[in-house]
Length: 471
Ligand SMILES: Cc1cc2nc3c(=O)[nH]c(=O)nc-3n(C[C@H](O)[C@H](O)[C@H](O)COP(=O)(O)OP(=O)(O)OC[C@H]3O[C@@H](n4cnc5c(N)ncnc54)[C@H](O)[C@@H]3O)c2cc1C
Ligand SMILES: C=Cc1c2[nH]c(c1C)Cc1[nH]c(c(CCC(=O)O)c1C)Cc1[nH]c(c(C)c1CCC(=O)O)Cc1[nH]c(c(C)c1C=C)C2
Image 1 (tube, helix red, strand yellow):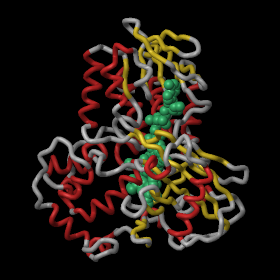
Image 2 (cartoon, rainbow, N blue to C red; image 1 turned 120 degrees about the vertical axis):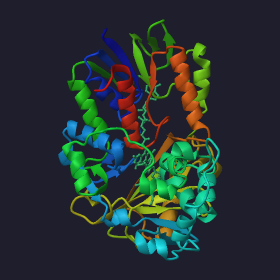
Image 3 (cartoon, helix red, strand yellow; image 1 turned 90 degrees about the vertical axis):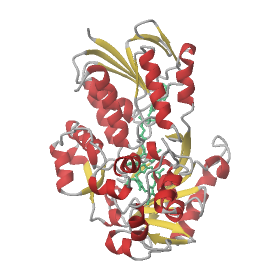
Image 4 (tube, protein in one colour; image 1 turned 135 degrees about the vertical axis):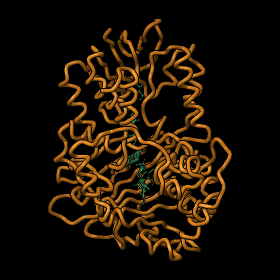
């Protein structure tokens, strides 16, 4: 029997679910319901008339691994190959990343020299921690905070500085609360499989999903890409998906259509919005408040997945203003709780600078798990305060004294889910509840199995295949 499927939320996860569902003949109709006036969720790019592109959300996607290949395969199917801007591993943006510690920028150790020598801000060579790590016995806990795991295996200095910064630079989160099992599964699995992170990295620690590479994914591997973007900004990806859905026939796409509530009718769902739809199976992004009261245990678990708010300030400067070159710098929470890091966007993607002039584009990211403590209520914070804080950071961290020639402030409320300790168990319970109650519902998106664009696209595919089989 053919199914009608509703996809709730047109972020990259919902669009990916639609894309894969639309390939199956088991589905007669797909209805995509998006609250906002555009699709793409956090993939949002400002394109200026002079050719400059500024990213407010993600700015680079990694091609590595099965999930990286899966995204590139989709990019190729959408015909976007000629739009891709690759950055290879030997590019300076891949080699140089900095930490801002003790009021100074420090290049993160890389290469053999960086591992065997003492490189500030660390007090001893990384190789010492790495060699000792092999001898440390396995942890016995089912889950552990990222900070506790890394302190135990590699020492507190690496946890306090490097891992604290890494968690801010990926989750905008606090490594003392984030779960190693859910946030850094390769490290957790390496310890479980090999008794050591180092041995796990060297010998492998488990199989990957089978995703055969497209021509584009093969090119990425041959040319050694570290990350990629799109000429018109990453927003071009949801735009291409939307276009494909609109031209595909079986997908109805609706913007400005917030879902207000759901109720079950035995075999499927009734979706409450401005008009009412009767629909079959449903993929949902933000579900807790929409579910019927009978599904309260599920709503409760969904509500327990916390999120953080990030202020993103894009700045443009005349000329070349950076004292160093690289991807950007991160700031550990011990240095400045509210200032997460600065991306030097012009270095990896100079193609996004305005045409015919020489400029530097930077993005300052602030808040995250520390937003409320540092800036107060996100509803009340002013754009001017965020802009001032961002330009001050550029002055004190990078010595840039000229004012920016252009800026834009975006407050991204609840934009990154936080996988706290026990996240894996919560996911297991939720999926068990859905099975036990035969709910025609699948979960996809950044709240569950990974926050990167690749993870979210893959989760949309898995949700689709869970319903209709491999597509
Ligand atoms: C500042 C920032 C930088 C990032 N940088 C990177 C990076 O460099 N690389 C990388 O790989 N990842 C990055 N990410 C992560 C990645 O962008 C996100 O995890 C991903 O875009 C989330 O996609 P999603 O579809 O799960 O959710 P969302 O983008 O949140 O989409 C959900 C959609 O559902 C809609 N919706 C919500 N409620 C309703 C409702 N009731 N009815 C109808 N519609 C509804 C929303 O309007 C939204 O469009 C970054 C994220 C942020 C915030
Ligand atoms: C300072 C805040 C943030 C910066 N980027 C993000 C935040 C919260 C969000 C983010 N960045 C990355 C991802 C995807 C992770 C993935 O698995 O692909 C997300 C959600 C990529 C990333 N950025 C940094 C690292 C170490 C990673 C992981 C992948 C990789 O190694 O490329 C570092 C980093 N992020 C930011 C800065 C300033 C920075 C460091 C120099 C901004």
